[in-house]
Length: 395
Image (cartoon, rainbow, N blue to C red; front, top):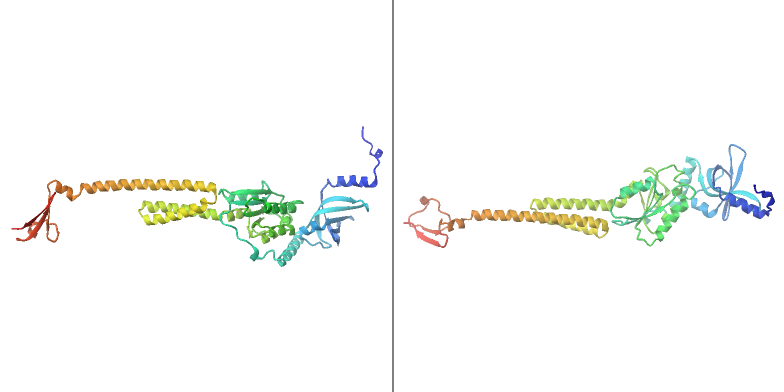
């Protein structure tokens, strides 16, 4: 049996409360043309009209939310608003309470972008003098983007495996909650007790409308106020958002952001490989002094890298053990070669021949006499035996 709601008697206030409770559960996006616009302190009132039929809608947005958007409302502007409806109890007036307002059409979006860009330029948000350089050999990265997105995957792939600790903030990158999500994520990372060295804010490409959160004043303020350096990698290479302009470093893509952070590590790894190859080459070619120089560079690289990332340090220690093992192998090889040469030298040692009964005869100048015709009668000579020396006069 169905309940007869007419048997339930409500006051006007109770009824409107019930209506508003239901309306709050129906968030909606609406497009229309702004026909009236009034700023009344904490609230912005405006009217949307439908160009295709006679229909108007009274709307409002709270001033603190409007200020986050960084746009200017003008009569005749086409916009898309998102929010919920509401019945104002004191007057019984039906209004739509907007959470976001996005200008419609490329022209309107570009105009809003240029207006905010000019405003923030005058405030010094884009000044190069306030932008910070990234620390060397970064370990701790705060990442703000949508989970399971291509942007996240591309960034992490090109970041490389150098033992990073990533503090991830999953956010909406477009839509109603995007601005608040991003602002809260930047704030959260700045308030974290973790030793985060850089924040990466990233998402893939899209239309001007889909990138609107990153062209908002609220996100620009959050980046500007961040104590931690921020890399912004929004959209494709040709997309330049307000976030990109405010950030300490602008990366053209999520991939580029990963490469920027890992640049020091990749360079150090390349140097390490070069020193290692040089060490082997010089050692093999008996160029000991140059091998020592290569070893010095190798040790320096190990110290720089080893002090920073434990995972990579283990890899480097493994490489060094291989180097020392290789060094030991070459030492053994040299010792064996030296012993062989010593035996060969011993086998051909003239003194050994003397022990077998041979002798060596020299003139007074020390020259070995190989032919009797070179000696004159009465000349003094010396003959070296296995033991002792004989001095003689030729007769």
